[in-house]
Each structure stands twice: as structure tokens, then as C-alpha cells.
Amino acid sequence: MDNKNLHFRTLYDVQQLLKRFGTYVHLGKRLWDIELMSIELKNIYNNEMIDKQTFINAQIVLKSEHRKEEEKEEERSK
Image (tube, rainbow, N blue to C red):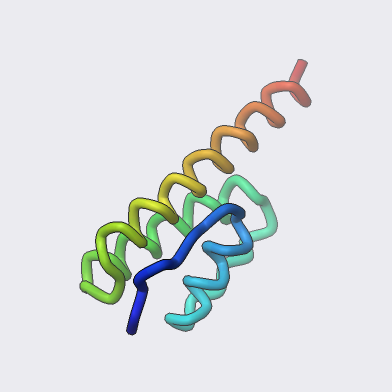
């Protein structure tokens, strides 16, 4: 699979990448979804199905979205 020039800006973009490999994630809580997506992305990368830059770009989005969700949960608990 040609993974060159793949750019990830949103969680949706990462979801579309995972779907290419038959991975659909919906646990019912966005934070959990992001965590499982990160695990699945690592598995796809470790199996050499995507290149390093694609992996890094997607991980950056996931980490950013994870941080945003943690901040939202923190605000809700105040």
C-alpha cells in the first residue's frame, strides 16, 4: 500500500486509515476509542503495513486528541 503523502489532521483521518486495514473502533467513549486506535495503529506499523512517517503523523493526531479529551473530562469533574 502506498502510504506516501498521507496527512492526518483529525481523528476522522486516522479512523479512515484504520478502516483501510479492516479496523473499526467504537467502544462508546471517545477517550477509550483513541486509546484503542493507538494500539491498533502500533500493530499495523509493527507488521510493516504502514511506513514510519505515516505512523508518526497519525500518532501525533491521536496524542493531541487524547490530551483534549482528558482536559474535557477534567473540566467536567470540577
